[in-house]
Image (cartoon, rainbow, N blue to C red):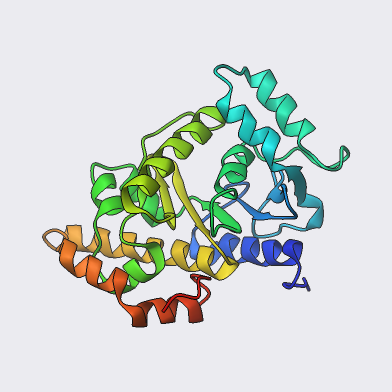
Length: 259
């Protein structure tokens, strides 16, 4: 039994929720999770761990800034990346953090982001491995998709996992924040998977599950003659309704006190 009131306990609970076999979000060693921990540290799933069975030994505490600084270096070899990952550990006997810890470190530096969950949902990847990836990212089919996943998601073209992917995620998310004025809830990686981010484990889980549901509905709509998307005005209306903001706070999807 974990203590969900601690960062480690909350992270383990989220990991187990995302790793449930029946949800088809991640299998074997797929996916990773993280949470902010202290002023400049974070907890992240260690390389090779399993989300469904993750325990304290499979979580590594790291410093964020050295990994964020690595993204700004004009060139870095695979050896440099391995060295930075190992040196970022707060405990030098801890396991090696996931190579994707670099994008976790950067995403956790964004306002309002305290938890990050990266998974490979079967239904979502069916679309991210297709010509419909951009429509799935940028258009919406039903109101609860907007409530849980935001008015649109960030789409990152396929990029080699590791440092190159972390930089691509950083650049795409920065562009989305500049365009929309808000931190996105979902980042979609072509031919790879999904990243959900938010202030609470509930926000990450809700965005992940709703994205998987939206993908399943999209696939069904494609088989039934093609998706009928909501209009831009419909999406904006749901995204800006005060009653939906209230519901988001009640569900742990947002932490701001605004109406």
